[in-house]
Amino acid sequence: MYLEKIRQENPLIHSMTNVVVTNFTANGLLALGASPVMAYAKEEVADMAKVAGALLLNIGTLSHEQVEAMIIAGKSANEVGVPVVLDPVGAGATALRTESAKRILEEVNVTVLRGNAGEISSLVGIEVQVKGVDGAVEGEYTEIASEAARLFKCLTVVTGEVDIVSDGHENYAVANGHPWLTKVVGTGCLLGGILASFLAVAKGEEVNALQAGLAYYGIAAEKAFERTKEQGIASFQIEFLNQLQSLTDQDVDQLKK
Ligand code: ATP
Ligand code: TZP
Ligand code: MG
Ligand code: MG
Image (cartoon, rainbow, N blue to C red):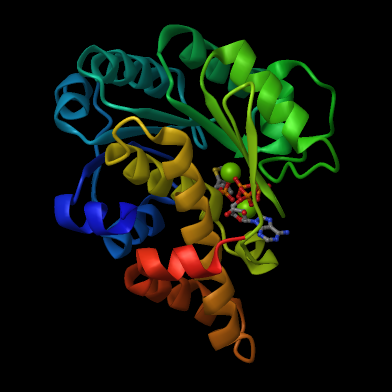
């Protein structure tokens, strides 16, 4: 149902993302059936966010100016009820990243905060090791997600081997996925755009839409691995896009874990 809606409506996803993943994000969103646009200038982001189906804010290669523009875009999206996804890439690794993510969360009404366990735990003040942008930690993903959801008053998604969706009270786990997703740069960042697309058509069922989006993404990886395991991760990256294009709502219903 969500995939069908996305493919019918082709929601515009205003993506303010990092320089590493821009092309992969745009192609992944097109494969899904959404319509990507990257726009960064502070003179235009308020206008773009207002006409979008959802706004993606990703601080992966942030600058002070870009964070200012993200806040302008986020406030504009809030004025007209456009959902906002924040990916706090590398929060905890440097003070600039942690403080910028917190500032966005304070000034913008973020719909969904999505990050790995290291990033989200650093925002809620739990001490864990974060190495660069690769912040995997063991343990209490659910507690971290739930704490962040309550603290920042937004839905929170913590990803890893199992993904957790939390509204601060109820928590849901999605177990689809494949470790090769960690061998392709930008799979976390693209996921933010994919979840933004699901939110664009969610119409009051945000938690359900997030679970469907996570399952869809993980199933695409599982299928891509089955088809490319003899070749390697370069083939996997391409086949993953094929799967994002061809999976249906029925596939997701059948294969979600
Ligand atoms: P990191 O910087 O730690 O790589 P990220 O921002 O790339 O984080 P991930 O946590 O890697 O984000 O999540 C991206 C996607 O990869 C999600 O769909 C997640 O479910 C999946 N994923 C991550 N690790 C695994 C794993 N070990 N097994 C299966 N799927 C995984
Ligand atoms: N450096 C800054 S942003 C970025 C790198 C390598 C991309 C991170 O991508 P992801 O999706 O979090 O793995
Ligand atoms: Mg990753
Ligand atoms: Mg990431």
